[in-house]
Image 1 (cartoon, protein in one colour):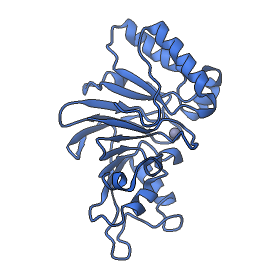
Image 2: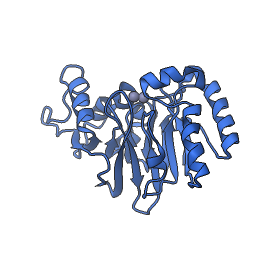
Image 3: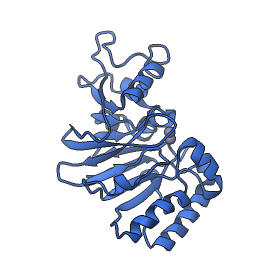
Length: 256
Ligand SMILES: [Zn+2]
Ligand SMILES: [Zn+2]
């Protein structure tokens, strides 16, 4: 199982991209930078997308990926909460901003086949077993736990300010968990109103878990706010030192 970090931030520049991941070249997690980070051939190899929620930095490249792969006979499977799929359809694939690529278009087969998911109900896609876990965010949102056919497991919290321990301790036993740490500690108020974590809020969850001898997976903070990135990294280093754990912030093109 190879996880490629396509984007690790909440904003975008020439070098930094929106939060987005690709597993084994075929399974995308969110679509914030699918098109901007991949070649045409790589985009054509994507077979399924798991969308955590409807926010633009997570859904943006769905229409453009559909157009890029117009020549393909096979649709890309699109998974998300019903509210997420409805929002993407209503605002991005509405026939005005972009064509409705969930339908046949000028004799071209539909580019996307939508699948509604439910939290805590596992399903199979491309041979992977996937379970969505409810997240705490201003709109309906989930994280995903993904187990490969060979038994390797990785998880993503998606955007959340909620309890991440259920993901860290899930029975699927993820080896790596990508966690939303968007703001530095001094902007905790902003994290709380927008549904994100800070290094301090993360520490408040990890500390008690470690005291209870919970074995933690490798943790990779992502969705870092670009304006405060250095500050967040410094605060994460301090948390890692205090707790005696490894916290390696994600970056573009990181491979695991
Ligand atoms: Zn969001
Ligand atoms: Zn976001």
